[in-house]
Image (cartoon, rainbow, N blue to C red; front, side):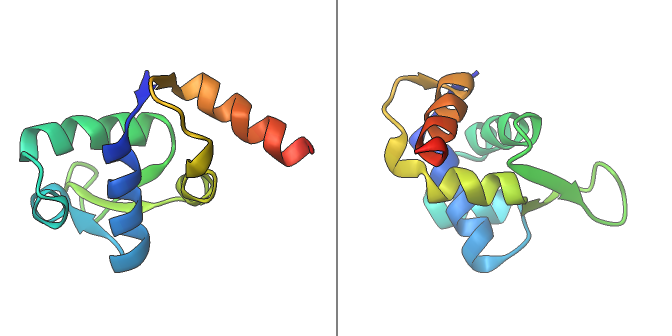
Amino acid sequence: MNVYTIDFQLLDVLDTHGRNVARNLSMHIDEHRGYVNLRLRTLHQANGIQRIGPKPRAGLYEITDTGRTFLNYRDLHDPPMTLEEFRTAIANATDS
């Protein structure tokens, strides 16, 4: 699983504006909704965001503490980079 610039854009919008749905997020970052949905699934699997809402598949997302950590260390992101490589870079930076 790779980490892309769009992932940080989505996390930033969720951190700044609060919980939201894919349609609104795609308008915030001017990206195709299908691609946003794909990246949201990836961020969810990486625990960067969580699904919330009245129903489990409502499509409402909010950032997690892990997502905020990703944002705080985004300057360590050097594409192409896998999620594991990014987590290792964060771990190395916090050990220093």
